[in-house]
Image 1 (cartoon, helix red, strand yellow):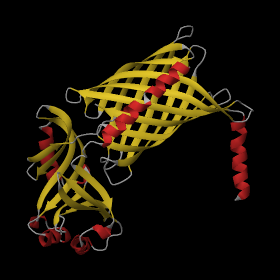
Image 2 (cartoon, rainbow over the protein chains, first blue to last red):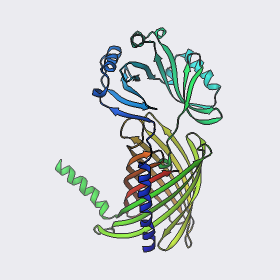
Image 3 (cartoon, rainbow over the protein chains, first blue to last red):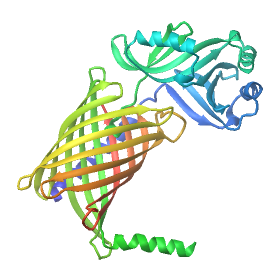
Image 4 (cartoon, rainbow over the protein chains, first blue to last red):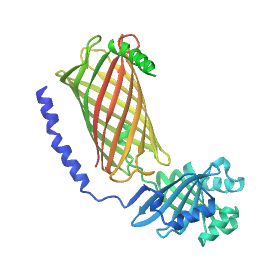
Length: 196
Length: 225
């Protein structure tokens, strides 16, 4: 028993060394953290109030992606989940609405279905309707009046499929014609603590 | 309210008094390496169980130190799809001066939501021990991980992980059913290193005997090379 205990104790310094080695490494370039609304540019809150009215609960996040800072508001409005991204100075960048596949208009559903059918081993996980416009005022008007002609509509889709010969998780931006405008692989964190 | 509390404590303490209880430390180090575009992964794991307290049926809790066992496990997994993987491996258990061999097979499904990650794992294993019949187990575990700050887990952030597991233990003339639940707080140092501290509760032998409860303090360190 003593021999095994000694062996066990002998790996403790190794574990401590690993901790210090890990702490000394650079942080990832992408970071997202929850913040209070008092840390958010005033203009962002005003834009939300003006566009969506008085919202009950808004969760704010600060995101840093490759050195680029942005603020994101997440909330529920009329039973739909929204996320709105703002630049550091408070200008709105895009509005995204989580939408169920079966709730999509039949026309866009048909267009996207054809696009998805072209992808090998495709499986849909999440779809969001995304609005962008040339100005915050125009985007606000498009949302309030539900007038899509005032905004550019895209669909941000999370899916698994074979793309560029790689079978993995992807986040893709599709336009209303079903064209895949941009895509990026979703890097999944190691699942060793969930698998073992 | 006070009477209700006393009643609940009495109801709970009666079966516990007749149960066997043990607990202590269950530290683990797990080192993984992925290759071929993360399709393949090999994991080596060292886990050691040390008893710090014990209670026999009808007796009181006693503080004691006993080395119980050390497990060396190695598992190779292959990712069938971004969220599905299969794997197999072996475990060598060193306990009471003898070594036990266990073969392991598993399939797991890992999914992610807007912030939570969850996994289903189905595992079968066969334990070979000289002088005993082959022991076959089938295990199902559901686990999930939740960041404690923000929606996604970033470097140097805390998270919590919980799991529940059902284990059917089949051995000629000695079958059992074990249940496990674990909860831990984790610190995600970076994509290569994370550490978890938590509690692992286990109960077995509760169908036709006096239940055996175990409460183990986990200290898990995960390395991805």
